Length: 518
Image (tube, rainbow, N blue to C red; front, side):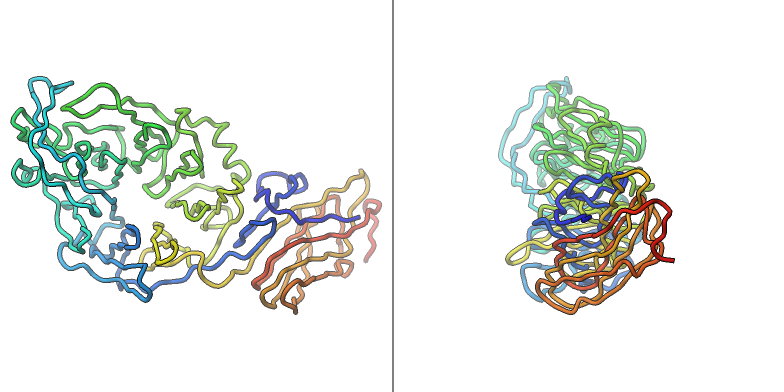
């Protein structure tokens, strides 16, 4: 009898009974990729030369410019220039003692008129726009939660943004409150403060002075006219993430560790700016780096694992997110400091699993989880960023004091658990005889086959692949002792660059408990 595995497009199914996998599925794949119906090696990360620092606090990319914050200093690197290195930006510095610095790219302001509001009624007031303003600059806003935020502008200069006391009608109407996480939703900059979220004036990301009077002057003191005057999302506990949902209105997503809300602009205006209707969602993202939008849905990492939901439906329905994570849910343990990003038709989730920390890889084309990447270089991963190069894009990430480029190194050793074959007849055991493996090999190396009998890995055989190109590796399983069971599984590993094309297990059925070899 013969069992053949030559279709691997069904993805990883770690939850189902190994003998009940659907066609094309496999139990587990480590450090591999599955496209074109074959299994290929993933590539190892490569460490880049970064600044010598105690702690890397933030990484963000603006097109081809990579911005790194380390020990409070700001460094930049042009990824489109071959051989470029990080350059330290002289001038202002962020707090060197915080573990995380938050960054957000903001455009130039696009509503550049002086606002005058009839303050006799702050709800639905008459708003007048008089006179042109100079637009605020494009830049990267940087927050450490302690000091006045900085902005890095395209000319390579860094400066402090203005505070509430510095805001005036004569000097650009700039005021950015101290905060942490930030999100620009295309119209408004949101900044996380103390258990609430501050919002900028529409179209003016560096202007948080929403409360102005009929002469366009700010309402004082700051307690009455500052960012608190139109804060949103007062959730009563520490906010972990602010982002936008995949909805037509681009609803604002504000999350804590245990729950989240969605804010939709309402018809009610407060100091001339829209207020929000609030919807409650079931769970929350653990940090700013654990929420992404892919394939029309929003995906987050909460305390128990990866969850997906369609924000249009308005709720995190168990049936919905179970469909997304069902096949890999048995990998999840309690999450601590996850990170996620979408890049090049894949989504990468750095999470805690039963196999330790690593990256769970989701293929956005086949819509399956396909691999778990586990490399020493991933230890302590904090944040991802995608940066443009001269011809393409590159994925980078930082740890506490190192920076790496992902998917560009040497091809990694692969481990593949194919699942099990179940006996078709009660009272009969499977007795494996031969295992045939076909590679398209780029190099020579070792292949190891491990047999599993009724849930127990019983023995392994290792051989050497001695040919490049299309090559076949065969194992005589009759050399193994106790090689029988009602369910027989196969696990493979190889340490050379190769494409796995097919695996065949030849076996016979025999009467239960009758041993062929003693």
